Figure 1: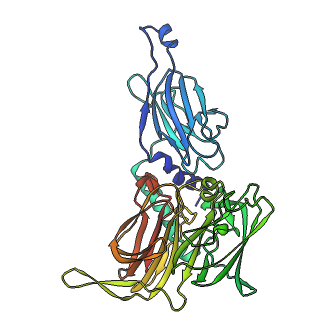
Figure 2: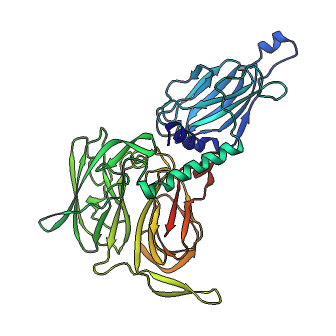
Figure 3: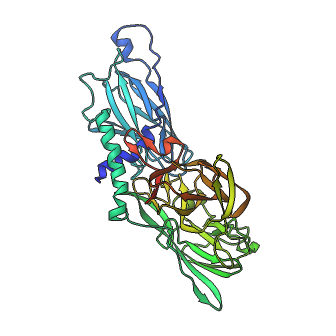
Length: 462
């Protein structure tokens, strides 16, 4: 897939929010001289990770334009309007600050506005400025040669198909981006203690084919290495900070001694650049899915990738989640514990890496592959800042655990709302062969006119 195609896919994060916002300058009387002196048309714009609101602006031709721009995000952004070979741009705007951009009168046509920070445009910080003449037309002779033309139906279909083809090609060719997270980290044994070494670094991470963003990683992975321990084990985490900012490690949902809780200046001093810190505790929690993540500057650090999975296994044996069966009248019955054939971990994200699953955006997301008749256990965690209702096509799944605890009364669903910080385990009996989409059901997180992007993967039943 070409870099330009990837940019178009990612840009739909902004373009799919079809919210128009327009304004007219307050002009008095008639006549050309009076119109030339009319006040500029003014518009309010908000920048955040990763969108520009509104995603479409209607403006009049022949009138100067003023944009009041606020950075509502957590990192620096800018706002620029491209008009032919001329770009009008604000300086970099710090988080929480504002700037004004004045643009001279433009001819009728469609123009692009965007954030000029490297990578932000492709992640969705892009929109359309539609300048109309007095009759409402946008195809006047003065239209910008670089105007963003609307897509034909055939172009939309071809764009959508190209993304799906790239996703499916991974089955034959392997991942279409560099960098894979969730790799199991084997411990070393030191004085009878299971010891895990975690090194925190700043990285360039490929979130979709050809699209690299600034990120942070444990051991070069996003999500960080998967930690698998048994209940009752004594564990030790040796953490080295190789970033240029402080760091602490928190064990989300786990029962640990207070001094191991990883909160700066409450339970420990931050781990400064170049320093090490050791955490040690006994695993007391029930078998289930837990998370480790940064607790310093966490909006940026967790958003950029500093999180990973801790799977607490039973002291002996394997998972014991009940299976549901359906009788001839369509009623559910609890059956014997399911034998897990396929196990998968899925982190949901929506911060500086864009809308993502395991730090990848469709078509780079990894499918869940299993065989017909298998039982599939999927661990879901939301490390973002938004609600994400995850929906599986073709199946009802069993929700068997929440926040690491098996549910006394498991229940069936096909869409599960996961709040920031929450974790769920769901069980799927893969009886229907095919490729079944699995995605967030907030539609601007997954699909636009150019096809699917962001928080989309698939359960593939062979």
